[in-house]
Image (cartoon, rainbow, N blue to C red; front, side, top):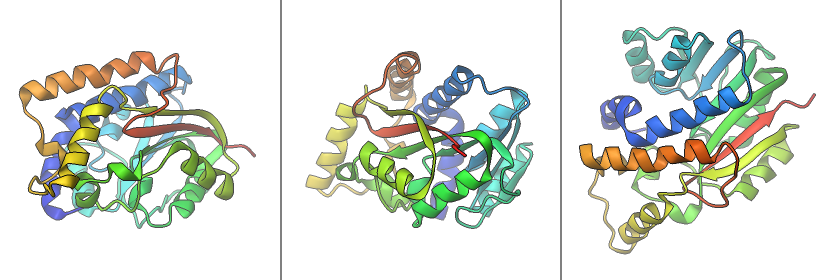
Length: 245
């Protein structure tokens, strides 16, 4: 991630509509799958650790790691515990340590995505679970992918192929999400390509107080709908996986 982007990212984790709604979706899944408060949860690629802090406040034994020393130091300065700097897809504790691992929009940042999935599987206890989100559709590639140094975007089928080739994970849930905002996101990405519009710092720059409220309301509706259905398309893809020994 570009160094100039960190400050924006730190502020966005707490307030930006996309982070807030995605966090609500993840917390809803943790509740749906009845992850007990005694569980050890690890957030791979945790950024400044805002989600780790939220889980700690809820009573979970949560920890996280990120490749950015600046991001980790910022999180620690905010009182978030159990954060450390990682190297690539490193998960420092011994294999079989965690009950739940989160990899939220992080696999696309790692060149060896197969290795990252293998590391997640090894770090889980028997019957442990993983929640993974990745960006969808290579044709949606845009400024956000470049500024955050993505290697790729996925389809649900392409990610399933990687899972089957490199792990024994059982797929509990597979769905696209950020579906309701898919049309405007697609239009912005396509027009930006056609007219070579790259002057904005990131997609987070397309935001103000009014838009933040509107987009959050629309995206957050998916928290309810994802309780009983899977979406067939969207800006992102979500997998719930279980370690299958």
